[in-house]
Image (tube, rainbow, N blue to C red; front, side):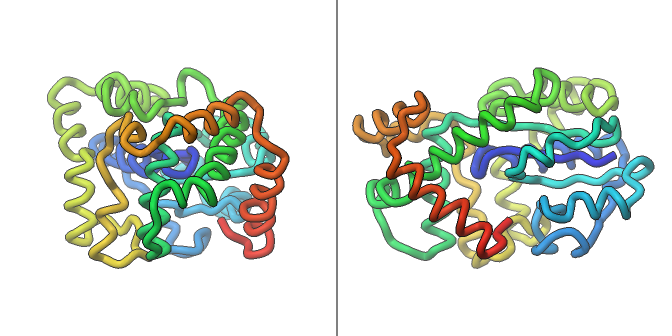
Length: 265
């Protein structure tokens, strides 16, 4: 079985991927490692990039073995694949304002630029919000109640979320003691510790001192400490399909076209 944990950038797909991996381990299931064959970063939880997904499906015995990848897939062609019970997608979504704040911190760490949130928002944040909205619309066409989650679900309804994941994978429910073990293993604090001591290689391309900072609070609503009323209005306009022509053109140039030219995945 191929399990794909998909979502917008900074929406919780890394955490979802970690939770699914720990569920499989607790059920005694071995996750097969494809090494560097289908990724541009062997240490990334994105073990299968979108452009190599078809190659993976041709070459690997995913109907017998278990494979797991995180993803931010962008093409509707990917989700229009012929129905296959051995391919399981999970989708995760998050409050758009929290996504923007999380991306702000991620961008600062990875770019090593010292910039204010307002500067980031003016040049990048609102473009990222436009992307989040478009991908949310795409993902909603292929997700359903059985395989979709809100980031807040994982925080506030962990037990129900775990059993929902397990049921979708035909693995059965967990008892209370197993849920307690899973919650401890998959806490943000434990993930930070594992990243710090090298047990988890998430964000390996980032300086080791900064790596664990990419996993921040794991909470919802932190955007209220950053957004002005004008920021809120801008996001509301984007969510209500009132994005300006200038914003749409800027998004195409700096996101869509840049990805095509540089082959960014």
